[in-house]
Amino acid sequence: MSQLDLSIFYNHLFGLLLTFYIFSHFVVLILSTYFYNGKLRDLELHVSKIKINKVNSISTLTKILE
Image (cartoon, rainbow, N blue to C red):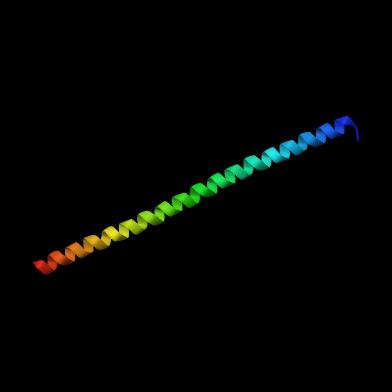
């Protein structure tokens, strides 16, 4: 193999590794954002259910006391 062939090979190898690194970085970024937002949505849903239950129990108590 000539020097030019080796230079082209290493250039392509470096480009492939750089592309793989950038792609994996964005995949991790997108997945972590998705799961982080999913956990926040689940937490907000759980908190809203607790608030609804508290409101229902308070309204039930006021009806009983009336």
